[in-house]
Length: 328
Image (cartoon, rainbow, N blue to C red; front, side):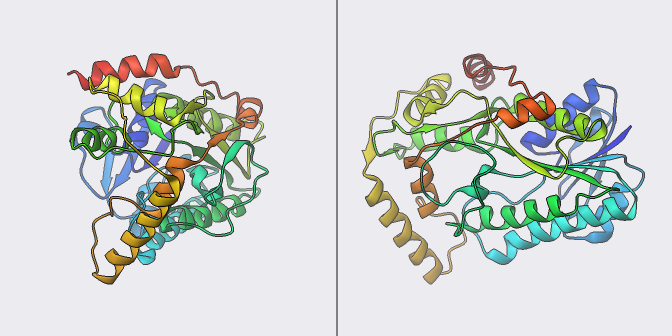
């Protein structure tokens, strides 16, 4: 089977590719940059922007399955940039599947599509999309997810996965940010850090994608649906941060700020950055303030029941692997 992975050079995309290659699949990747390390593994790498419909169509031709992983992440930037990457790019992937009669599409979404700044304690997929969003990433990811699910029909079977806080060896986003802020003395808890959150070890997130694809190609129970994905081990925010810091041989975080103050600072910084046209991400935003202060963990029973998702790597085992990677 020939499989296309958008964003194969990224953290999750790369893990999905490794698992596909281990199963003997023929893999293509489309990304904006070049990735010689993927080519060395035998991946056919195509350089292109997902906002370019023709580039996406060319990459998808001849494939039987698409994993749409690429997205513009982060919490700061213009709506137009996020819309082009996350919505237009997704539309082009859907169109390419339709054009080339590709029957199966697995879309990487985000739990943030339901996050309205309030606690989410053990919620399942019946929770509605957030009525308002605190930044453009979840706003555009929610629209993209809805369009993927709406595209599910008799010829194209689609599913959307919402992995939460993906981490592990090779992480180029979450872990490096935490470590860098800790080393700079700028890492603080928002509140007392007792709020519980879910996280997802990268290999588990990747295996969820393959399991969902297998179900699409089989009974199709998951077609047209969205699923929360995690390690199924909710953990206090302070414990998650401190375990990552311990893996990096750094002391635990001890400083904290009240949630209300963090939110107010985030709002003020957003306003100032917009006023002065700054493109770099503020140290604090409203979205980050609420994410750091609230509970957000999920009932993943649907993923377990519908396509047999099993988070095989525990948080403890993952931290050992992370420590070994950070020490190299």
